[in-house]
Length: 238
Image (tube, rainbow, N blue to C red; front, side, top):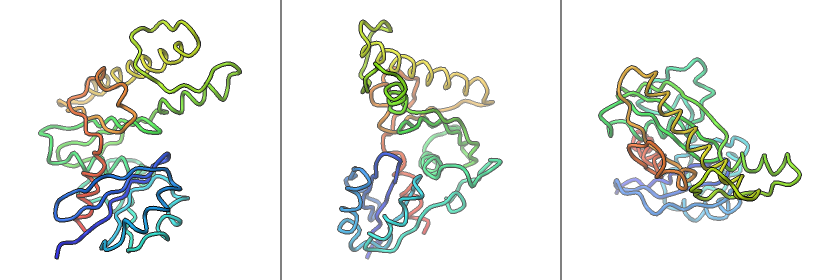
């Protein structure tokens, strides 16, 4: 009988879960933290364990108490195959490491991972599994909320594709600023990483936050569920 695992990604804004069994990943469930608590008991039935990547420590105990199986909460020291070339490895977000694990053995080069969710992160991992860290920026949602929170007249904006940098009213001005600004920032950072890194880099995008931008970005590949590739590796290493 094959082992059945629940793979879990707990992010700041949402939770994603999927069953992994016999090398096959099932349909990915996505929802907010409250909905995840309602759903996890049933989805974790008959699982050997839940393999969890979390960047929300305050939520972990509550989530785990709702599981119907045992749990494996990943930490920087328990991610297999990676060598952390960091000054403070205990500080790195485990989701960044799981994504780095997900690209190993799949690209014949060193890899720059661009991940956009609540935050936008850039992470460097070489073909030998050495993880070098990277950069962190606030995501577009955070930037939009900051403008809404700290100004009197700017509404909360959901960014959509913009053809021009010239907004004709407040809404389109904010959309143009966020859309074109983040495209320029991400592409500029990619260019900077390529200029500073001594060998060729493959650039892999992931995360739902890149959806609206991705056709404008200098990516070699886009893998929206890359973190689950890493979670599968963690489950198979148990």
